Amino acid sequence: MSLIQPSGELSAKIKEELREPANPADIERDIGIIREWLSKQPHLPKDMDDARLRTFLRGCKFSLERVKQKLDMYYTMRNAVPEFFTDRDVSRPEMAEVLNVIHMPPLPGLTPNGCRVVMLRGTDKDIATPNVVESMKATLMIGDIRLAEESVGVAGDVYVLDASVATPTHFAKFTPALVKKFLICVQEAYPVKLKEVHVINVSPIVDTIVNFVKPFLKEKIRERIHIHSNIEDLYKYVPKAMLPSEYGGDAGSCKELNDAWRAKMGEYTAWFKEQEASKANESLRPGAPKTADELFGMDGTFRQLTID
Image (cartoon, rainbow, N blue to C red; front, side):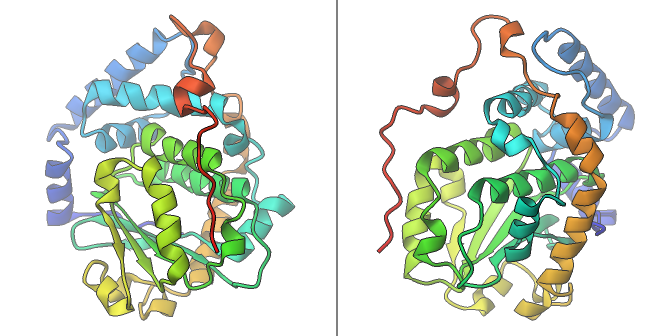
């Protein structure tokens, strides 16, 4: 699966939006500054490659302080939530099952303003509830791959969530603690600029789920959630042609796209295994170690997701 990268005028527009220096030497200088900072952090690994560092810089609009914060959280979350960052192997039965019943492919094309579109859909309303942790793990695996393979830089991400097969049973295992851990990972540890979330094929369950998730989202992201009563509304935001064939587009079927990403995830199996040791060592952190309570506020006051 190849991700089409922006070029020409679109690339120039994105670079301006991301405040990317015109001189490549300035980017290399910034990478050097971040590497020097990492070398002085006894609790953090030193293995971040240049491609991923460039993605962190772009995602943080070349704010060096923001990059430092993101990198610290990137490695901290690997230590704090090991269930998301271990056993990342698509050949494992648990992971294979998730990828069979949930399609989550980033689409190859770009929107007119340079955003990457990610689809998320279930395949059958009658399937058993998929393993929630494995589902979240797969999402973050794709995120790690994109850190390396978004080689030019995109303006942001657009998520399209198809709720057509969503049932109350499917969401019974989505505990508040687990959802909060996942969303902190996504929002604080990855250089993602979430531009829009679109929910299509809605049903009464959707409002309940959205209201359940909203408290864990940053306010600006809450305001970017769009609920669509018909697919034509989505086309106003995401060009029809770049969508999978199930939605009238030309990108191929969701299964074909998902299978291509499954293959790509398989190509990274050795890298994922190596990365299991690449995490923060809280015993070496200057000052106090970061605790679960500090990171997640796990005080036992979460309300449960109740769906009738």
